[in-house]
Amino acid sequence: MAHLLSDAVTLTESQQLVQTSVRDVCSNFDRQYWRDQAEAGEYPREFVDTLIDHGWMGVLIPEAYGGAGMGTRETVVMMEEIAANGGGFSAAQAVHGGVYNSVPIVEYASEELKRDLLPRVADGEASIQAFGLTEPNAGSNSTAIETRAERDFAKETSADPSEAVASEDGDEYVINGQKIWTSRVDVSDYIVLVARTTSLEDVDKRTHGISMFLVDIEDAIEQGALEMEAIPKSASDFVHSFELWFDDLRVPAENLIGVEGEGFYQVLDGLNEERLVIAAECIGLGRLALERAVDYANEREVFDRPIGSNQAVQHPLAEAYARLQAAKQLTYNAADRAASDEDVDLGAYANAAKFLAADAAYEAADAAVQTHGGFGIATEYDVERYFREARLTRLVPITQQLALNYLGENVLGLPRSY
Image (cartoon, rainbow, N blue to C red; front, top):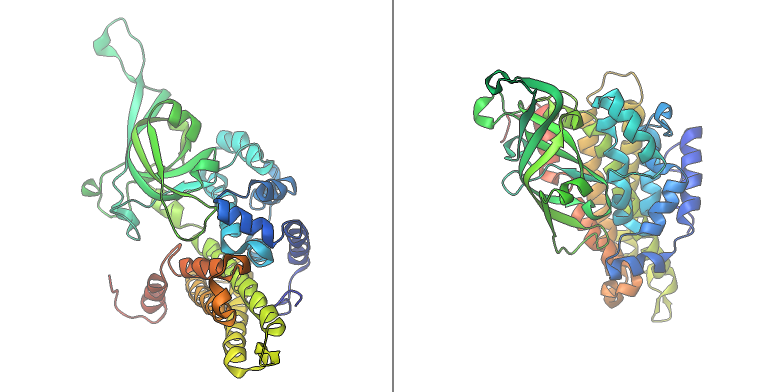
């Protein structure tokens, strides 16, 4: 079955070029490749390197810094196709951070940092695969983070030590704290780290006093200021997640991203566009699971006929198709609006798209397992991996309930529930 849902939306010329190019890259990595990566728990380095060679890690980096200068409309196509053409949600997640963690640098970093780092990210010389926000005591409530970054000014020399004054040259931030569920640290050169520069008790609004920093991972390890431990998990086998501990980590002041204390708003900026891309990844996973199920339903014969001729098999697959169709149309429509000058509540579209796409992916993967019967849990058929990934999509980057909270409060005008 060739490219399920390929006619669900009308693509622009640039989107068509993205689709063709990404499909061409993915065609070099078959089902066995992804199965081997999952079974070995190994990051798909060869696949990622091929994407880098084709310039896809710089898709959101402006052309002035060596990137492709594309936007949300192109990225939803890119990520859907990566997920749909063999690797599933994990394949998309293997590169998602590397694509989106450059955005805060593009939007808020100093010109000096942009010119030093972004061209290296675009050509694959450097990677920013990791984003450190979540903490053991601050999951969805990200304003409750406890990791602290304190400014430590260098002192100008003076004959009289009592007359020494703070100097802007050589000053640093000293970071202490803990992060959890920070993914791809093992394959990244840098972490975009979120920390409090003013404690929660000393701000007049919970969203104030939070800042973002670019942390050189190798430097942090050499300082002896970073410890990390992998978190065993049952989904995304080849995308590893870590718990991190920072102990007096020294970060140059010029690695502050944007304005000190305004990091929370910088994190939120662009969040809706990224959520649309997550929805596209879910749709790609759902497509993949459904295609596998339809192929199996046509091939597998019981009582001298294909099992797909039974309505008990047909109907769940048809329903999954309808759900994926609806989710894709909403997601791509929202991506078009994000790229336009329309004054729309993009948060409403993004949260609705993520909610529908994650549920559609889950229903498609569940139907795929059921269609395969006992073979649905056999790793050689892959659908059990798709099911585990689909369950994960209902948790990350936000739970389905938080998406509904947004819609209830901001679209329906209901009282805030938390």
